Image 1 (tube, rainbow, N blue to C red):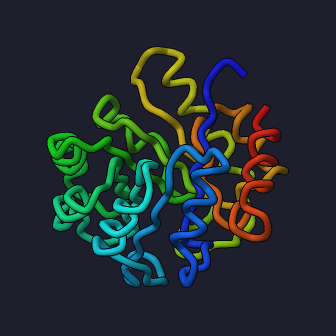
Image 2 (image 1 turned 90 degrees about the horizontal axis):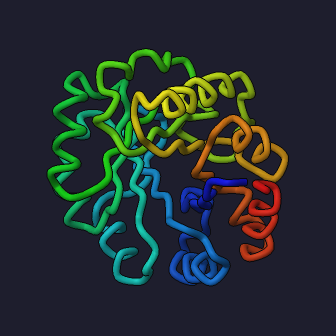
Length: 219
């Protein structure tokens, strides 16, 4: 594998009573960043956490915090998440009527700008903002809950995004989120994914062993 594959444990699946210890385990096991799913109970049917937790995580880990905003009106809270310590902030195309402006604001704050698509959202809707984001997060489940089954029909979307990069249309990393485990990792990596967001596959059982298995599957 010529390109570098990064592992991003999603704390949505972590034990929040031992969150600090589990993040330290991820760090020791060689995880590359920590994925933080922020949900508002409106855009997705679940409610998680906000900037306060991001600030606390930023104080206990050297790993970059990759904040995924599954919320309505994300433009209203970008500053708060950046100040809390987010190194990357990803918003959903579906929640941003002024997507160009929102992505530009994230970059102006000094964070990497990401955009995510639900499974039913066509990739072509991002053509007007190619070049304006650093991360493309392709959902391979419908967002809102952990532990869902991988939607294999999303693989062509990953392939098309990678084709954009190969053609030099834009430069961005491709992250995949949803149902990522040792069985699905080869599928998404072969399709062009660079960042593997995994929750259940990391935090259920031995964290170090789970991360090792994901890396082996990526090779």
